[in-house]
Every structure is written in C-alpha cells, then in structure tokens.
Amino acid sequence: MNTKLSSKTTTLEPNQGIPPRLLWMMAMVSGLTVANLYYNQPLLEDIRKDLNVNEVQANFITFVTQVGYALGLLLVVPLADMWSRRKIAATSMILAAMMAVVIAFATQVQVLWAASLVLGVCSVIPQMFVPMARLYSLPQNQSRNMGYVLSGLLSGVLGARVVSGYVGDWLGWRTMFGVAAVIMLVCLVVSLRMLPRMRPTYQGSFAGLMHSILRIYKEHTLIRLYSVRAAFAFGSMMTVWSCMAFHLAGAPFYASSEAVGMLGLCGMAGAMAASGIGRFIPRFGIMRISLVGSLLQLAAWTIAWCFADSYLGLITTIILVDIGAQCHQLSNQSGCLAQTPRATNRSNTIFMFHLFVGGSLGTLCAGFAWNALQWTGVCLSGVVFAMVSLAITILFRK
Image (cartoon, rainbow, N blue to C red; front, side, top):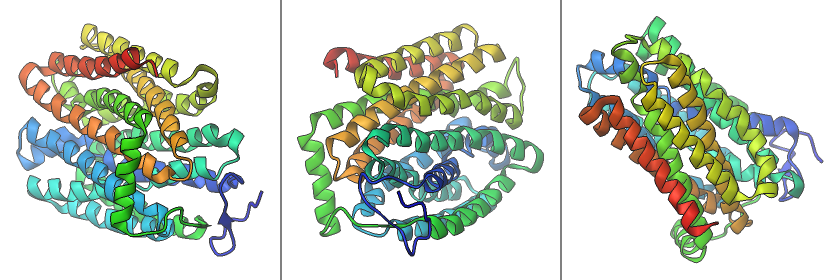
C-alpha cells in the first residue's frame, strides 16, 4: 500500500487501501469543517440578546445552517464524482472562511441567516471523505475506515459545542466565528498538501449527474428506506441540541453558554461509539443496530422529561440520544453505499440530504415546540421523531 501523501505523486485506486495518515487527515478535517454547523448552538441565547430577537428567530439560525448543508449535499457533493475533490474542497473552505467573517460582523439577524445558509452549503467536505473511505479502502476495512472518518466528524460536531461555549462565554460569540475562519484557512493548507489524485467515477454533464442521482433514488428501495429512517433519528438528536441553550438559561440552571458547551463533552461517548459500531454491522445487520438506536433515543427522551431539572438527567439524555443517532447513521449509511459501489458520492448525497432535512425539521419543530410548551414540548418532539424511525424498522424489517 502506497503511504506517500503528496498529491502530486499519489493516485488512489478503488479497493486498494488508504494510507493511514491520509485517513486520519480526512477524519480531522471532517471534524473541523462540520463544526461550522454547530458553533451557533451554545451561543443562541447570547446571539438572541445581542441582536434583540426572540427564541424562534434565534433558533432559525440553526435551521438555515442545516438547510444550507442539505443543499450543499444535493448540489456540491455529487460533483466529487466528476470533478477534482481537491478543487471542490479548496473552494468550499475559502467560502466558508468568508462567511464566518460575515457572521462575526453581522448586526442584523437577516444577514446572519443568509451567511449561515451559505456557510452550511460550504461545510459539506466531510461527505466527500466518507464515501472515499469506503471506496478506496481494502474490502475488509471499509466499514472500519468509514467509522474512523465518522468518529472525526462526530468529534467535530460535539467539540464545536464545547469550544464555542467556552469562547462565547469568555470572548463573545463573534470571536468564535473569527476563530472558525482561521480554522478553515488551516484546513485549506493541509488539504491541498495531503489530498491525492482520484480518478472521476462519472463522465458526463452536471444535468446528467443530477439525473443519475434521481435514477439511483428511484431504482433502489433500500436506499430510500435507510435514508428516511436515519433522517428521523438525526432529527431526534438535533431536537435536544437546538433548544438546550434556552433550557439552561432559565430556572433552575441560569447557566451561560459555557455550560451548554460543556455538555458537548458528554456527547463524545457517541463519537467513541461510532468507530466501534462499524465492526458490528456485518455481524448483527443494519436492522438490529437501527432498532437499538431507536430504543436508546426513546430511553433518552424519557429521561429528559423525567429529570428535566437535573444536570445528570440532561447528561444521560445527551449520551443516549447521540449514540442512538450514530447507530442509525453508520449502519444505514453503510447500507446505502453498498447498494452503489461505483457511485458512492451520489448514494451518499441521497442519504445525507435526507439526514439533514431530518435534522432541519427536528430543529424547526423543536423551536416551535419550545415556544408552545417549553422543555415538555421539546421532549414530545424528540419522541415523535424517534418513534417514526422505530416504526420504519418494525414495519419493513430491513
């Protein structure tokens, strides 16, 4: 296996193996890039006060960021099958850095919404790396290597909340987005130095590429099933995080953004579980692991409602709901990619588009639920999303 990492000398070939250092770089950059989606979550209360908006308007920041990511999945990620991944990654990182700067200086919530939407579109780089980990790994290492990259991705998701909570509490929420811009420029340099050449897997026009995605979606029933099931599980996870800042700002906690960020550390259990879940997929199958994920999320929401005023209850909720979501994501994503081994970016686009549509809906529903019934409404919303995911598993047994 070639272990040189110079993009000028190395060309990856399907099923021939990935150099370990490149795999870890992909995991690191995935985490740092996807973190752009989650810096705002612990800071929503600070942003709300600074811009003088209500909770629904503040929560909409998270919603439009998720929508932007879904659009990027649909419009940007498929291009990796026909164009240079290095150029796509470089362009995305430059734009992401620019949008982070715009957010840092925004004085109107509408500007913040628009910049957050574009930032979401530009943060889809990890979804080019996940199918890479499967396509270019040795067959026996495919699920394991996907788990490594997803662990990096999830570490970024959860670590973003910790870092932004601390930075927001100490230096202000605007400083956090300035730091995010610098991080993107560092990732840009690292990626350009280490990403090798990869031969395109699709020859044709962009319109033809979009048509091929639609054809894959129509022809593969399992891709549709796996995608929708995981989407509702992800929506359940996003529900808890989208209103956590509002919940902790009130009685009996009266906590700052730092406390919200610290809870992100609890979700690291999900990140550690992600690398291990991949090993169990061939043994237990996608359906059983998805079933476990749904049951974990339902248990989490029961605890969230019963122990709403307890840090221990919230910590347990976060750990269980995150692990449950990762059970769904890794198992169902692996199943989707297995359906189209020569079109992994396109099948991954379908899967992740559904996932973040589900996350966006979870965020949006949680915002309205909070406005209507406070934390009880959030818990009910999370239960509904988890129950739909569970029902799909029970009804279709796939």
